[in-house]
Length: 130
Image (cartoon, rainbow, N blue to C red; front, side, top):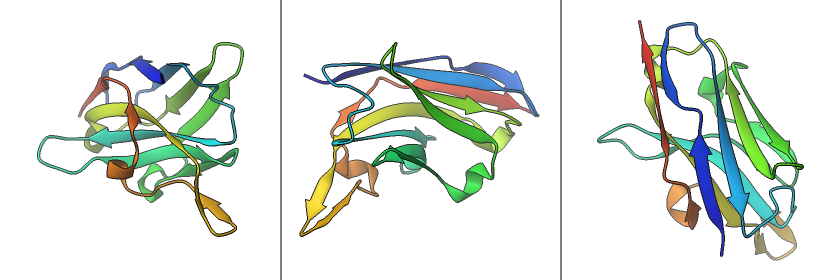
């Protein structure tokens, strides 16, 4: 059974940095048959993708604009999100997620929508003040 646990959230001022960590059990984060990603959600809005790995390649939401870096630590079996130059609009609960790589015909892909991901951590809050 896959279990994900996030840590590293907190409160920072605008321009500050945080590193989120997601420890996985029941799966190997570097397993190319799994998609790994970070999502975020604010009250009243849908959960949105922030960054992830698809077939070993990092991908980022447009709003990241080079400020965040996703990485894997295979020794600790973690997926980390380094966030720099944080802004108040980055305030949200951040969630780690995992999902089996999907296949349609000969094409493999990671689900784009959060509701198609089935393994989630409990979330960690990031608050950025101006």
